Image (cartoon, rainbow, N blue to C red; front, side, top):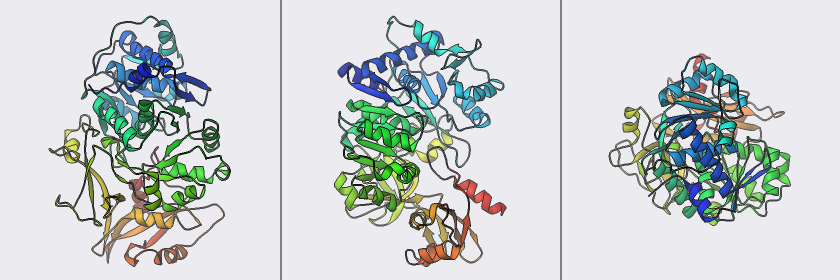
Length: 508
């Protein structure tokens, strides 16, 4: 049977191996101890709160041991976990709390204000204070401390039972709750171990938010599946991350382009001891080549991956030698992953041509919670998930992401993919960040507008950027306008919110 209780299975096999190092407190937990704590958390949900299999419980917290306890408690008990963004407002979270139908919300003290604001508009059976709380809260530490003796088995979890609801960032409207079944989480873990060739001696830092699919599934689940060690950071601190990569002798490091850029700009980047790192890997957004090259100059391999919350965060793989020979590629589909590139009529395109990427396999979600229309639009009757990403495949079968279908615009009858332009802009020494959108144009139908963040002390004019691009891109791809701003609006996982940029432009 496929179950997401990876922690329980690994604790049975290698109980004394170190599973988790929590940087904030210095705790080092074996698989047996972390599994014991997760079991107690599951009993808090079921025995104290009276939650049953299928009931939803939310968690509002930064990365912590308690967060992992809650996640694996869901894997054991059948209670469905709903992670909430710590960056969202009470107004934004209210929609998710109502839409998910959660019965309880666990929150840490730092987010008590948000919980109190939600309490004024929503009635839940339990408000669970992870740090202890007031008299009106259920005290998670107190009840967990009382549950010492082992009790009977939890409800059996079947492969298609839900493990969690992961809500999308809502860049194009209201967030959608992606239904993650046990089967999906387990297959993503198994497949990543095999296709990425992870090892039991691998040590990996996790500093991306656990409330996001990438934080929970990209490396956490696979590393624990093979019996490696996770080094958990509460948040993102470049100096702390470089320090722990050295001290804990991390071997595989996952991040997103924004994070790797910030790590590259930290002073520790030039001197950090990286001889024990097998490779770095980036996902979540297109990765500029200059970042790959900077890490390669430090003597380490740098790979690029691809995935979506809806299809499992890891869907492609490549070996180290291929990452050098094929910079910019996301690799080939992982084992047990089928991929197609299709045109607007749903027909396969030839090698070298751009088409929408469709994926199928045991790592695909069940669709969207309470949203059958969105599910039908994305997941067809043959099991293919339509990702909305444009990609091309070369003659050797390596894939390259061209950009989002919704980001593409047509200028003078020709398709233009902003990701390509952004990648070139980021190579200019004065450009720190950049995003390109398509807007209406009286002559060409649509034309590009580039939003540019310059490096401190490096002013640059629009004419200079246009000239810089003119020797790198065809004329029709060069933005007709450059808008200089202080920062780009981004989701918690680093994706640019282009809808907001378009609104800003239209208001101008």
